[in-house]
Amino acid sequence: MKEEFKLAGNAQKSLTAATLGFFFGAMAISLFGPSSGVFADSMNLSPFQIGLLVAVPSLSGSLLRIPLGATVDVNGGRKSFITLMVLSVIGLIGLSLLFTFCYPDNMKDLYYVILLLGCLSGCGIATFSVGASQTSYWFVKSKQGFALGIFGGLGTASAGVLALALPAILKTFGFTNAYYILTFVMLLGCIIYIVLSNNAPYFQLMKHGFTKEESKIKAQEHGQELFPAGNVKESLRLSAKIPQTWMLVATYFTTFGGFIALTSWFPTFWQKGQGLDLIQAGLLTATFAILAALCRIPGGKMADKLGGVKVSIFSLVVVAITGIIMTLPLGWIPLFICAIVMAVAFGFNNAAVMKLVPVYVSQSVGGASGWIGGLGAFGGFVIPPLMGKMTELYPDKGYGLGFILFTIFSLLNIAINYLGMIRKK
Image 1: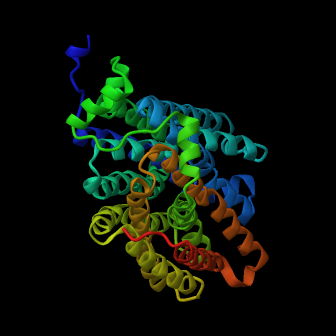
Image 2 (image 1 turned 90 degrees about the vertical axis):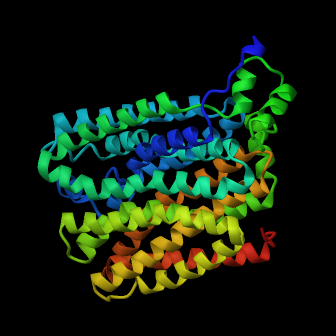
């Protein structure tokens, strides 16, 4: 039986599967942001409640990354990825049915139900830590930065695509039908991943009946360089003992959590803060999100060449400066230009962080990806309600005051990274 083993898939095909799967799963980042005005009107929501609503898909999408990312070190990730996609489809079905029977006249008492279904729909966002770990296991170390840049960049671009498309879908097909369309698209993404995906060679060999040592030797013959150190608990424990894991968590909280947060928050900011209409707000948000996502690709390549630490520190400096500028009443055009600069810095730093994961935590990549991807992305849930609360507390400052959070977080990250003495790579 062992002699009949034949490797299924390859690195390029698996990268394609993970990227496409995450592309569909990450759409939930923009699940409520473009339609926040509709929710606010039908349920009479405050800025804080709007901030919580647009952020809630990121709650499950971030916290589930921790245990699910670690499962890759045990099962290779394919099963975990599919589970998350199916849960997201179920959540979207629930939202679609709820809106069918309750929108627009019976929405006022459904806020917490929508939050719950939003959490379920956001499970697809958690495919990031699973796909990132899968990609790390498939690719040699010298190519991981670029591969992870493609995975994270093209995958997270879907949040921008949906931010652009959803306002048009809402206008053309109506509020309820728009969520049925999203449900169908998510189901399609799940099917595509199932058809294309394969676990890395080591995990295929283990499933085929080889011992751990035999699997490692044969997987090396297929080009695999990284191997897991233990089970889920051990993977999380080992990665948690390494100080650099927590430095990367804090840094990722600012820029990937910030990416999720602003992709959710910008539709509200452009409409209520700058007076733009739904389509204009969607276009500006989409430009920000797609650029931040795609910049992970050159960011990963630069991290391979210059080292992840240098790229990360420079990016954080840019975020700190732009965070201050975004608080000023400059008008939407200068603020949009500033948002574009911030998007580039986000993308480069996110790529640099993921490049550093296999560098510092080579024996428990899945566990580290879970901690970093999960707690880092948790910023996407925390930041929008904070920005909304600042708007409530200081209404005379408008919707821009909350951007000062990114300056504070970036400066803290820079201090932690230097004082923590991250080795230069």
